[in-house]
Image 1 (cartoon, one colour):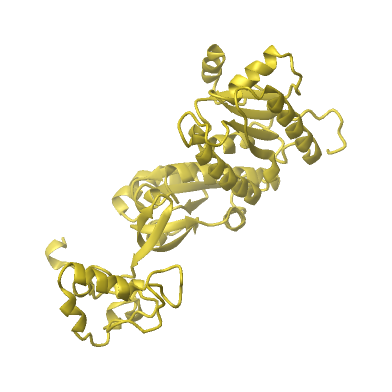
Image 2 (image 1 turned 180 degrees about the horizontal axis):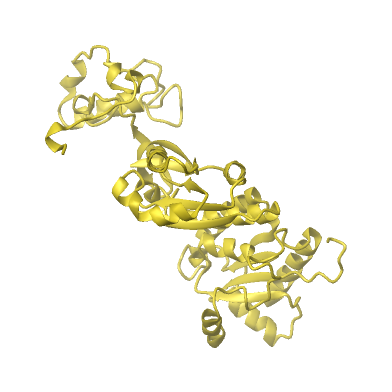
Length: 165
Length: 222
């Protein structure tokens, strides 16, 4: 698997609305290039992300999950990103216990102006996941390879997310 | 409340792996409050078990359900259908909950997903501490509401051991000396004379040392 050059990691990037999401927007305006296998999901704050969200992402076949919150001390909700940091650390342990390498989940702090850093972090994450290979559980519950867009619980929620973009 | 914590996923997976359909059953009372076995934890542990199962190439179907109280037959009844549909139950209740389910379903394997730790309180967010060892003969009234049986490492009833440093326990430096707390508290409420009261040996037959304890209230029996 690790030698498979065609492997393009599927990465879910939970991006905080107040920073990383804006930096992704800026990355687009700046025409910065980053790997295409990353799907950005806007969240109101990284502190809003429940443990289940991460678990479900891996359960549904994501090869990696990136959480991008505000710089420490710069959270719009004061300490949401600090709570997320602790939560991510705990989830990495659960993932490791379950048989998923903890390097597949990573949290970074990115401000709205750090588009270059975001692109670099994404490329770095893709490199790490390529070294690790695909998600070891491989298939979805239905036995099918997961397709992006289908990772969301239902078409309805997918539409809602898209309409916000 | 009863405080418990999650067992490690490999330990849980090891006991459930021979079954095809497993029900992860949560409890909505104490273990929900101590963030160990409520609906949310059922979802997280089930997800982890599904991942572990697929990683091992097994096809275990992990189902989720949570009832209000696992230690009460009336509430267990609410999970009857779900329990029947599955080959085994992984209970995220306390030790009492697991046993209540096992007694109610003699033909169904029931496993424990939590380690039940103690009877305690939420000290601060994410911190729980033991407050009561259920000794069966409560002495709290004599000690200003601070339990020397639980909180003194040596369970001293007639004064401190003399080994504490500053106000720290000599056994566990991260814990305060219970007798220091008792003295301060009794002084605050003007009952420091109580400290001179002698306490005879505790009647341990009323504790777990005397075997399983049962309380029977004839006035409530039907």
